[in-house]
Length: 322
Image (cartoon, rainbow, N blue to C red; front, top):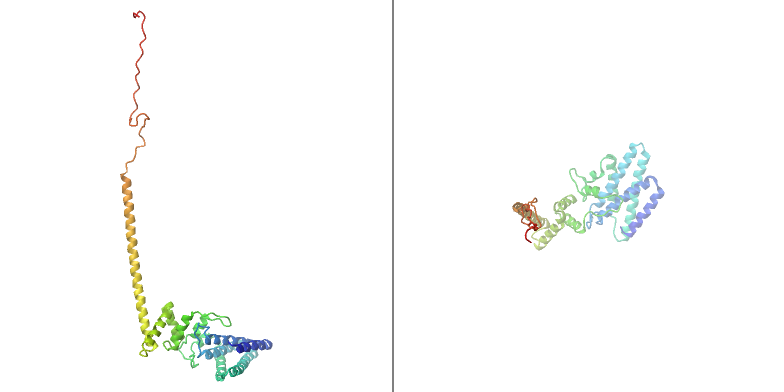
């Protein structure tokens, strides 16, 4: 938002606080939806991907649906007066916003030519909310064609589902995609290769982190063809090339795994053979007899030595002649 629009919001919050009651409630709801509109338009919902056509339609009708559903709940509780005050406050804030937008755009050299359409979307949303008090508002908004503002049975624009899943109303949200991914999504939708965000998100999910590369490849093919191919045709070729690349990669991975398995089996066989050799060698080693008798004077002695017979000394006898 610009400086003037920020000031406009700040002044509105002050007035809403002073008025209080249903006026403050209506302003809070409508301000949250206006923030979503800006985040969609300025590329903060999906990084670097601004939704210039249709953000007004979705967010004005969405704000009206939420107001209508809250009013229906108040009526069900017997609070008819509060319900009507909420609706009246919503319409009053819508008129104030469009008057302020007209002044702001006039000062910047533009025009607020869609003012009547925006107010009509608010009224249409309130009516839808009153008639569908318990239906999930995102389920209703998913059926809206953002370009025309028409509701189509069996149609899903993808935006409502994405917002419901990833966006917190009234908070500072961070995009779920990188700048490269956001640019890829923008190219897919703006080129007409994908009809809406739902198809673009399916493409991103199919190719995961390779999606930006596939889109870039398609853009290069379209540029080098010098008009012979449009982006949708070049994208089909880029997708086939990517699928071939992934198949080749999967084949190489299978071959690598087979080689690793074979090497592992060979190493296991070698380890087993080494273990068997070591075991056989151990069996051939002669064991020493721990019961052998060792004599210090004869290491080869195998039995006890005989007692030594010493010669007896002969003493002289009487009358021996000496």
